[in-house]
Length: 84
Length: 430
Image (cartoon, rainbow over all chains, first blue to last red; front, side, top):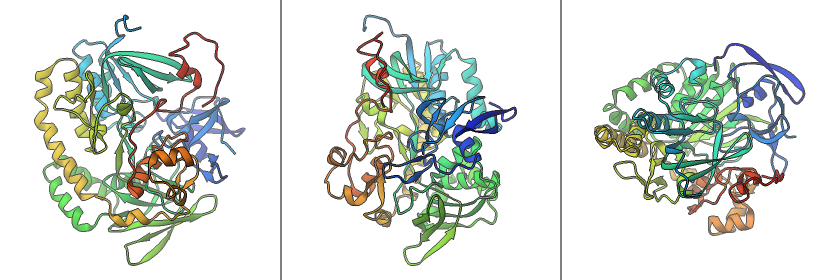
């Protein structure tokens, strides 16, 4: 888990290069995406707790919905979609 | 099922300081030990990212000790239910698994306490420890204006972390009065290590105002936070900012212990001097038994690991150290007690339950947590009340008396795996 060799993931179809050891939440923020999901009433939401409990950071990873982006590390080629 | 011998003599849930210490202490005496954690890394939340950014001495020591021990690690594994004594139901990569134990150590740590106020749901408003966690693993803060607010020593550690990663920390607003902090400073003198740590953190924050008796009342912005308004009870003022890192202390993650039937005491899991809970063969260590920090968690974890593996003398040798940290814990709680004004920073329009968008005004139509759950779905979303439960307890005095499975969001097929093993259910609801 050294922050050394870079890897590529895509965020909403756009490729981004991040160092190994980067969480998906951090990659999304690095890509300039502010809104991770919309609430029941349509309000913008983004990570709150950073510890895997609040679930505000949940996104779709490789087609699997509701993954906690703050608890998951980027893996080469991952396709990440924020929930609009 | 019960005729099978347990796969592991000792299962530890949570790979933070307490869990690592417990797992090592038991495994080094040649017991079959498994350590279960929902993250892909060792160290829990407090030691998170240490592998990536140069380890703290104590973290590195425990990581190395764990690697040398023959304990088995189940990482990225979330415990979702405890259907019968000796059995945990877990999920890894969306697949169900079962973990059998003869003795269990619960070391599930703590989470931040979030108090709702207008604008706290805006992107850019995060926990203080929460943002620090994210920053350790790549969240960009360089050049960002960060206001740190809330309560507790974590604010100082978080602010120093943000500054070290290039953020412009505008100020630290601690809600506790300066007088209470001065008493805590005196108590800290009994723990020179902690005192040195505080000094070092403060030194890293030269020029950043650390103010007491101030708290946030409002965050503003449209798609993200643009400013935060603070008060000292008389005046209010506004700081433009890009991020608000805001936590009001820590609350134990007691959900698994509750699901196992362990008794609580003032919100903490109740343990005896062997770190044993009210349920036979279940031990608990670290922040889940009361907030006291990582050093305390290591001692408690060792005691739990030794006790669970019948190394009573080794456990007993650590009792005095534990007692010293318990005194530290009490002075911590006294110094950072929350002021009553914080009960009224949320307005009737403020969302309390973020998962289901339930406002405080809606909650006020009910008299108890259970009633609000049934009628307004408060606490029924994916976080299952982990954020709004402690907030509602603080504002409305409601207690959460029980936990229902699953204790974490899980796939239906994981939950039915226990009953219908080998079935070809394809339901994928949450």
